[in-house]
Length: 298
Image (cartoon, rainbow, N blue to C red; front, side, top):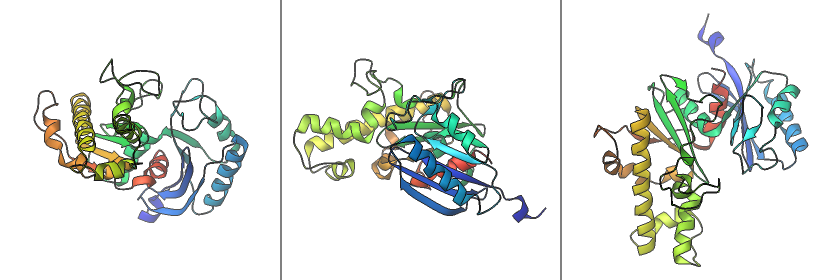
């Protein structure tokens, strides 16, 4: 069998709250015919859009199946999509259970943070490692874990939800209903909210602008230093629990160099060792969803 004959192809579809990204992805990591479009608000329109994407892409190469990257997780017993508040039309419904009956190929579904670490494990900066953790720091805070080359999903597909582990039981209110969740401190929206609560009306409208104010604005400097300290505690917990060989950061906040420069703070929060794994930005950025979704078939 030649190398060409052994290369597999799958369709990867990343269904986000605001956009859909899709492509044919090869087992070598080649991305063919990428598609990007706004996420339809109505379920019937969403179904028609996905069916059209599949119809267009299945002609590109022999396809193993269709992998979906989702903003939540599907309960394997009920088929219900859970924990996807930014996709209210399909959240808490069995939408994808019925969708797969209308598609011409086998379908697999996975959380978007799990797809991030899968894409990096197969094709990116975590390719050489058997144990890796991916953290998505954007509007929310997501996580994915590879242990001994296998994706950690738990008994009901819920794991790992590091963003909703509690680091301060009397802390900030999280949108999930609990207090003191990691996401209530380390997501981009929560960092900005903490600044606005203290500052009031301000021209700072996003975290990129806020990070530029470090050492220029005393309050911005305080919020960013506090964020980096909390980040070091959370990453220290991750290292103590999973003992990864590498940690990969995705999402908009992963572009901030400070997260890679303050690793000395993490060592203070790791149990039993002063060694910490390298922290690297994801190689594929926004494309990781569709790449990781396709990798479910590899």
